[in-house]
Image (tube, rainbow, N blue to C red; front, side, top):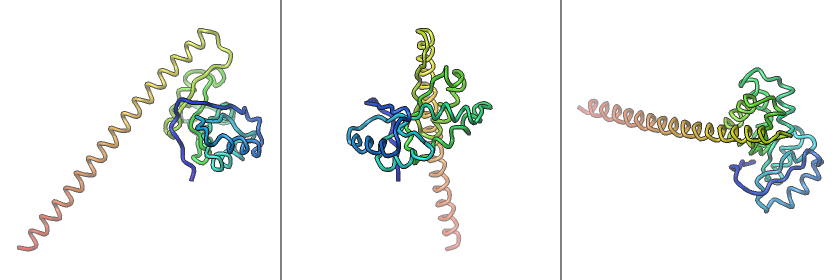
Length: 190
């Protein structure tokens, strides 16, 4: 079973899809104990080789160009279209811990926000970066990253509250069922 790790600060590598599976495996096995945050686009053919790379090496993966291609291929059609286009890339055995999102390449902040929401729904983090922006564009991307971090915190708090409410409801239902069972036993023993 392949396990995903939470995104943390650390060393990252980017192969830009330049490695064959064998080259990627060689690299991954050599760095497996170095605790890389992730390797971005480690294989030339992600759909065919990403699961083999991650499951063999255990090295976490980030996707960049694959996101661009998936969104181009899938068409957008709003947040649901973005989520559908990215679903195949978020297959757990691929070991994806981050999507690298470039607003100017993907079509703007709304597309990036939808991609971030889709990633978050799968427990995958996002990294906002730039392609060739000026200082103004870079600042705007920094604001987007901050907004997405805040949205992730809100979503996590809501998920925790929902889980706590569900646990309380289950506990209350179990107590009620036990109480009902006890009173029914008590009445049948009379």
